[in-house]
Image (cartoon, rainbow, N blue to C red; front, side):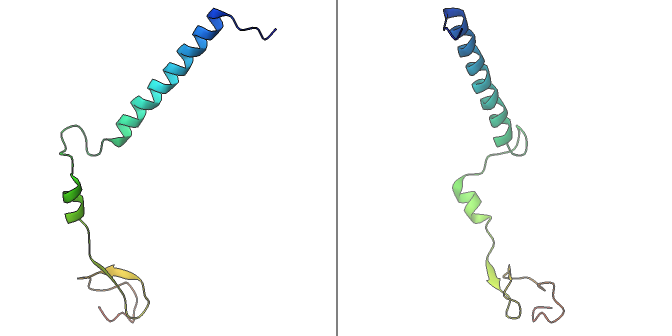
Length: 78
């Protein structure tokens, strides 16, 4: 009934390997950002691309340090 035979075990191993390699293949494509010719950013380049934020004095929402307005009518930056 539920006996394990060599062909069943081999088919199970093949199915598991196919699923594993399928996830690796699709995961690799998802990790690539910008295509194959785009340069990869290092940790330092990512840190340099960060933006200084400070809270709005009226609403408390964080806006960029050089922002003109936070989007409210009574915004002190506008």
